[in-house]
Image (tube, rainbow, N blue to C red; front, top):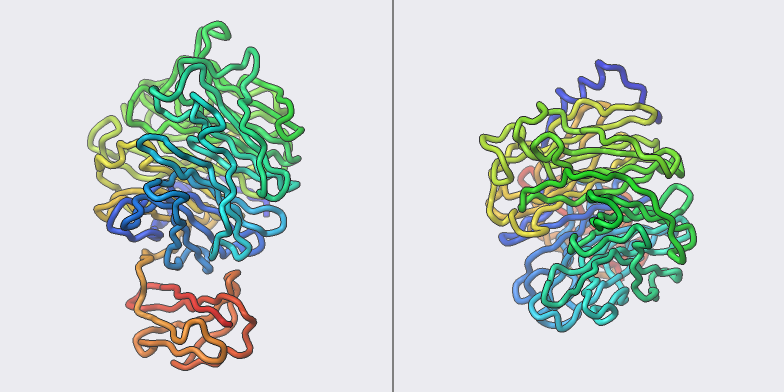
Length: 514
């Protein structure tokens, strides 16, 4: 539906949202850099992926599913490394038009760089299981460049998969000039083109910005876009942000300038990543969300084009007092299917001190379709979180946002539990309600046997649990379970889930019907 909000309802958003957050990960070690996607055929089915610690395997990619809109999450799956001793990072997710889910991430030797790949896997059961790995880029494909850092994956309207990357931050291995790179698959992720840089003459990234990270997006008409930073004195005295556009799967690009200025954020710890967003209702409506230090501290800014050529002046999104010394960072945003835009970020306006190393909260704001301004910004996180030194590492904190109908789903990592874990908040922007309770992904009390089973399953500790429900792998409700022994002969051969309540928290356990 289209949102028609008065000034009063905008004020309601900023003052009346109740915040409770769900904890997706629950390890006692590092869990960070989350990414979230929503099943296009079932908006109650969410899939999250992140970097997580696993004993004997260090940092791996983990995934988890929710079948009730984020209330409960399955026990995380950990994806094995390509080689012993590797580490994994930089995960993204996406569906194609046939409901196939893809995951993209890096798996590499992060000490000596003897090996490394950008990996793509597909899942035909919505992330419960992942297929064999496909190599999208190998570290040897780009000698003296290491073009396998920070891969982002987007999928267009005819199911071509685009992955953008940049040079790794390894001065002894990487030589200038630096570039943004891309590969594309036109055969359902089975093979990929060789990596190519896509900055062009008079629109080069240059030799000053060592990691010109690109932010990709797909337009409503299937056009591929990517924004990237540049600083080349011969092109302009100031740093610039460019937009590359391709209508032919990267065979050629056209360029426009999004912004030119000298307002870069100087704090070395700030998470300065920017986001390119496209409006699914208007092919040439494109937005850039980025941080700039225009008023003496880092603020969140938005610029857009409605014709794909001319960009508006930067619009400040966070609404704390200008030049108050409180920096913001960690931005992300998303358009919903109505053309409304949600932007979220990490905010320090209520902190006791200035700079990066202080308390934070997660804030958000909404720009409704056909509106020229954002709503009053509002708090998303349920509490202020103290700073921890682990957040100072590159990439150790990260945010991702999905805007589905009138609900913002924001995922991020913070240290409120004493270690870096992943949290999700679900906020309805029309009612102001955020109704999730905190849950954990550690294994609940329920065990199922035999598992797999052909005829009957028994639920151990059934007498200690309540609200026991059976779902299929797509998150579709099948039936309530009323007894410890349950006949499953009528079920098709597949994987199923039992979701239940134990001590006030919801848990999810899998079993297989064979």
